[in-house]
Length: 250
Length: 250
DNA sequence: CGGTTCCTTGAGAGAACTCAACGTCGGTGG
DNA sequence: CCACCGACGTTGAGTTCTCTCAAGGAACCG
Image 1 (spheres, protein in one colour):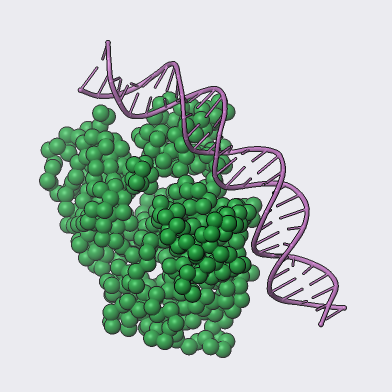
Image 2 (image 1 turned 30 degrees about the vertical axis):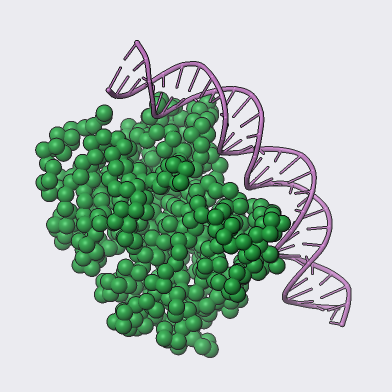
């Protein structure tokens, strides 16, 4: 049963316009880097705050009419498609500041399903307003284009024929840049299965590689948290993959 | 060097403003679907016609400052990156009507090198004018976004872990939709090596798959031309890949 | 007609997958 | 509070697909 964002808007914290100047994700958010005028535009266009209180909750389903663009405010989400055999294919992970639905800008329905990996909050902006905003605020458009370009680069990076070790190393490096927790430690909120699906590997292969990394003293794995003991070595391994180009603070 | 009647036009027309209403690629070109006003905008912005008279000729190199967007008028081009070992990785093929440089819209330098696969002609439009045009003509912007979205989908499609047969079948199907020559026949202007690089396979694997397809009566291969004897079967094989979504006439 | 480059086929090797079993974790209800 | 259940994580054994290495033939061009 598709989860309708609007249906929850009436409850509790919602209905309240999100205030960008109070957002916990401001440092990553496109709004953060916007000029004063652009910021005003964004703020006026942000329609509502959508809560996804539990893991697995869907934001929208593949094929649904594309009506909104979302920005992650807190939590972690994934987009995926499901083939006829029921296999999930994870296409992307989203973290605070990331935009969801960019690939629907040129289409009229979402090409993939998006669901929460952990409890999350996202800001919603109707596509009609996005389009209007693009015409008014060139800075916003530039930001959007940069984000799409980056998504494209990431997709191309993953399409390369790299070894399992290179892929996993690249993933760890990218995640540590993206959600850096304690120095040298990464928290991976998603399951091994999701990671494997994203990297186009078998779950077992991801496990084995992590084990091997640990045996070699490159990492120290403890369920969902990974300490990177040899960050330089991992970076060297990951280098050719070039997954998720360095994100700049807009 | 195979080239058509247009070659005369090219040598004569160098430096002449291209006339979109006379373009051989009009049916695929974004300009073709544009409104009368948008068309006027495009026409005014198109800066020059660039001829790439021989295969291998470079349009621009990876890392060069991104200054222009190009539209293919005739021929076939490829974009690729070169890793530190000197291996080429083909990222895309371009045919008449395709836009080159969309992934540079959000960057300041081209992320890949683009070179002619066969003798080609491309229309050039300075990025400064593109950006100005985007603000003026919403229809053009929508068209651009659609194209970027499609590129993204294609990249994501290729990143899946499909078998060699699925990849090759998907490629044949996509190419037949894209450059449909005689009914049921596809002309593949690029080398096997380029195809393999694009599909992330070894050259030999592409050859073997084509041979197997021929043994099974699915195709009839004759150097660069492939007759598709069992288009339905190929489509079924290719289906999960979903390479290059159906292109719509704008 | 000699020299590349491209295409094709064969044989062997290796990386990742599948199948299978077992340990672990977190939630739920008795 | 603890026992149970299901999902997740880890490890092992065998298989398979694709790659690498090698060589011969075909096409193209100077």
